[in-house]
Length: 174
Image (cartoon, rainbow, N blue to C red; front, side, top):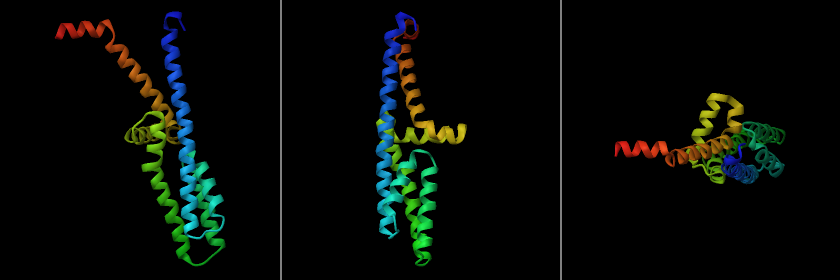
């Protein structure tokens, strides 16, 4: 990095570092909340080992679809092994689906989004776009990459507005 650009590059790197650190903290917080929701819901429908299944599901939730799939498999298996009719099986699936919907619409957009400086709508749009363009890997990396792109776009706009080019263009039209 040329010496004259070093302060700006270092400042951007620090901001990105803070944002990615916030992402990790936000994701961990979201996972704890999800673990508590899964454990509480499964305990409410009286599934054996509800707390370990819920905590495991919540902690694996940082990998899209994996945490939910493992938790659903374990909870349905436990309900089947402790068979008390199809009602409990339906209740387990309902609990898992409800928490999954809450995760996608409330928990991740609010907690993780706020921790990286993205609005909930920006998180949802970023995840949908990244999932469409890059599939599973896109969904996994959408929020941190979206936050980094937002930082860089803000920097570029700020540099443009402070540039001589913008000042000349503004004078010639104004």
